[in-house]
Length: 74
Length: 327
Figure (cartoon, each protein chain N blue to C red):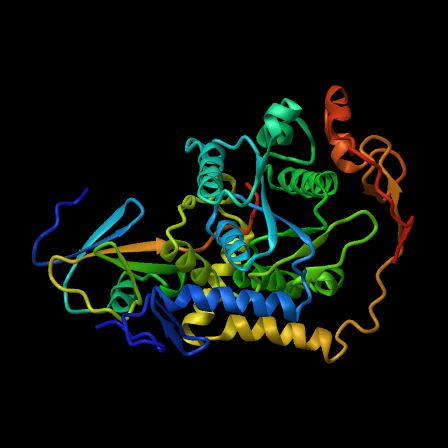
């Protein structure tokens, strides 16, 4: 796990992590990471939130992938 | 500040750009429940007199559907098929645990479980490895087993409706694939409800108009634990590729997926898209072993695939009645 800088935003997607600059919305961060916002939900500091929320230094942004393979009875 | 809920001005948990609607953690689940009821009625899926069996996988869609149908007061129970898929993650074990945890929190409903390896001596990957149908990827065998066993169990336990958690992204990915290949027969049959008859239970998809991100949001907001990991065999699946492609379109043109699906249904229902389509008549026969309908005399594909020693286990508890010709 990456140790978080208190001046950055820690972004987590499954086992991947990034440290990004604060002051951007979750949607902007996903776009900068070349991730399609339609494919993810956003949780900021453990709270589900719409992706227009702006992140502050020290915030943790977790991206939850929503696409599944279409099988509905594993 | 995130967007505010349209109804109460608290912070929104989701913004549905295709509806221009942002809702909070309280009003979003209410909206999902109300919309599901609307879709059930609009497509005449079932009533409160019907007995509904939801196929649950431990994933967000099927558990969310079970939760919504319980809230709406339908006679609904769950069916979990244990497929014996591990993939280094204990995938089937975790899926089953999620379904059992949900059922334990809802004593008003029953979870039926069929463990395929325990019942038939082989997991789905083992069946796939043994048969030509598998060809190294068990998805085709998996689909065959699920269709056969869901219909058998629904019949034996007296459920007349089988519900699945297919969402709009699932439906649109299939629609896109069938349109690319002009699979007219598949297109003509794609609909939120497939009527019962000829020995088959009615099949319904009450979540067919919700985006996948909406069913995931619902599950999280309602505190439903679900399996986040994908089936290990789904990696590289065509459906996932199409879903990603369609989400690129959606990002640029909000509502594109919903429009594609609804305009397809409109063309089908109101503009006679398949009015002249004549499905080939298939004569159905009861399978010599299990009794379920099959297109060729003798054993059905599922029973042919099973080792002879376990075939008696899949006989129907009581015989089906169906007309011999399907039109």
